[in-house]
Length: 154
Image 1 (cartoon, helix red, strand yellow):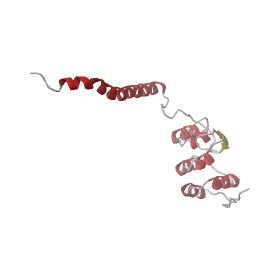
Image 2 (tube, rainbow, N blue to C red):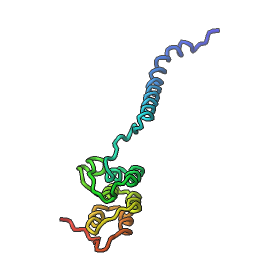
Image 3 (cartoon, one colour):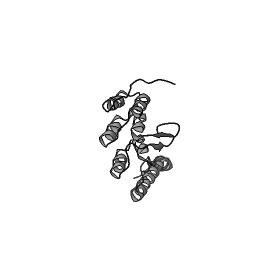
Image 4 (cartoon, one colour):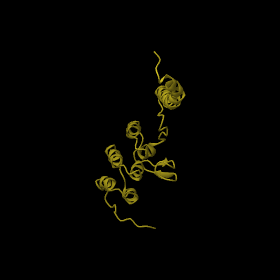
């Protein structure tokens, strides 16, 4: 017995292939990328690695911040933050300032918990570059003597 729609199915084979093959190839390519990432240890999407503690704070990389401080990096030391991730131009910031600029109150608190401290000038600079109320709450809890909350535009 012959099936009446058999000719129609045979004509659809190229169309089915055109629709199915690209997603299958994409899935295979993604699996290859993940396998290579597993072998090399590099993230396939976010390959920008922090060069110093300030960049780790700016990138919101909690693990890198903890590892670097445990390895002896000074949580108050200035570090250069590359242009792009948080600011359009390169900047030299303390880790707390970098966390403030990236609007990450949990990172600000973590840095204080791990020993970061700000003098009155650095605290005021961080306060004035922040417009996030949660970040300002974290800063307010660690306000040093003599630090002013007033921000004057030059």
